[in-house]
Image 1 (cartoon, chains in turn purple, cyan):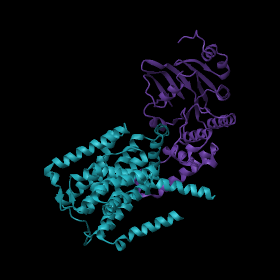
Image 2: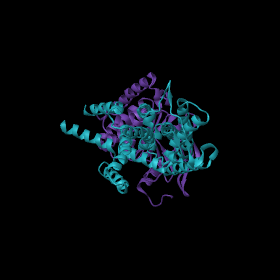
Image 3: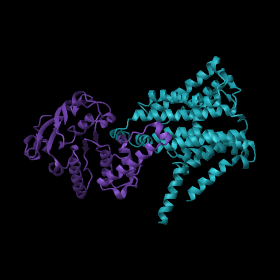
Length: 253
Length: 315
């Protein structure tokens, strides 16, 4: 269970998040939606340690979630990025092997001595990497350079890298952006399968059909505040949400 | 296939070099190339794999040289003890600089390494009691190997060759491990690397320590070869030469720095024979510009690319 309480982030006096509170139940798919500039990515950055929140607290598994991004990843909270983000000059296989960083243990001396243990661990890492690549359906691209793949496939590489880090909470920042219809369908199926492996998923996404299709809960942000929270059907009918998206001039700033 | 054959031929040529080189002078060039190969490999760990530029790398080289020379001269330690101590001393310096500068990285790291080299150089000039100041430390003894003294160029050549091979192995193991992948990940996309649990500062400091320690090994080898250490070992020119070797050879490759070291140790000597002294530096510059212009990513990456294209066109 992820709990966000009164999270506040300001940039030079402008509140990007003005006291946001919500919870994400374990084993669910929750979506965070809202118009551009509502604070969705800011919330992601604050939860995953890329941004220091001015106030509020985030708890995961009953303990405060604090520290640098790498500390937070170690707690099983892994994110993807809004802009496509791979290790561009590495092959798909090496991208995913890098994502498996925390599953290896080899330290400097065993590596320099080239011990059996290190060799076994490497073999295991390659094996696991191939499994993850198969999961996202990129087997045939495994040895190609990630930065040279088509956009949609790069997004899958990104997902594979995040999955390799064995998240228990996966935060996806606009995973479907730039994908074709067919690619989106495959992505939805994949996110569902990820949840089946008892991974909790929090998604920021603009594609409403996708959001309403996969989410157990939808949280709506506007101007740095939560304006609605609930099942997809109730959100679609919520007057404040409609107003926020249609941009009524009477909405309080 | 061709690459394998070329590498095997090159290895054979290096092992048999003392037999076919025409003079001790040529062997001397090869020994210096070996020492510079260690330095270039060491700098490449940082510059090529993590993307962090150390412009004070001569400092780690010099610390190694002084440590080894002082231990041999003042405490009469054997070379075989002084060498690892030189590596440790430089490694500690690398750790300190890394801790200090790698939290902010980039340009900040470049500045801190430059200043560090400047400060260490001043210390070596002014701490007369320890370093003998600008006069330097003459009479550094050559290493012994059992009952033999490695005082001949031929013997020392094999020592340097072994050390360079050792350095290559260290770098090879490191970059092909999860540690190496973490370093490359930090160069390629730091936020993404952090998101999968790679502790950026920790791994960059680790790279700085290993890199500095290897530069210390080169320093020790240099001190016991020239048998003389002075503040000149801290010269900025040494750092620049290392950077040229790494970039021209191919940063982020293992063979690149070695090829760069051979080329740019031999080049000034070749120019000395071929060109009048006034034009030597100019010719050196022209070669460098031409090389960077036609092979901007370095010799080894350009060669690899050419190979891949050829393989693709044959398919």
